[in-house]
Length: 111
Image 1 (cartoon, one colour):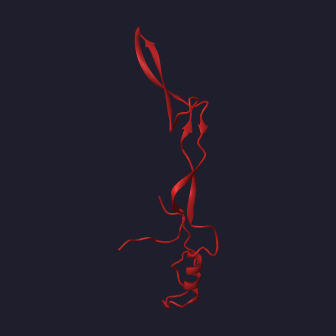
Image 2 (tube, one colour):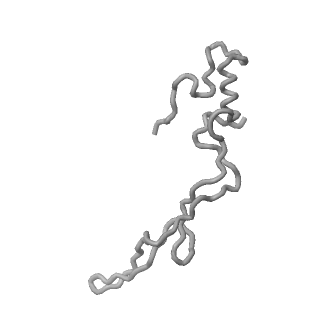
Image 3 (cartoon, helix red, strand yellow):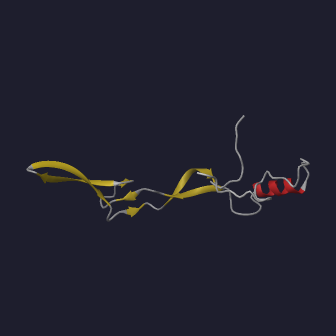
């Protein structure tokens, strides 16, 4: 399960323009601009696609099952059958709190 990031120079925000470590160098200014969201999409997620479904009765769940009675060798058994028809996806759901985008090129740590 390797990462999908690129190791090209200038893509990773902490890859400065050289080994000098000068805080005023051009590479660090680019990193700060990228982190501020000056270029590219926003780094916060406010909505997401829900994985829940509505059934015919209006109930909301990930999966729906129906109990059926099966007769085998003269014995009755109850068996659960998964329902996959007539389900309506919930759609886009607004998040209570904004989340960070999964592709945010910054390492977050707490000290």
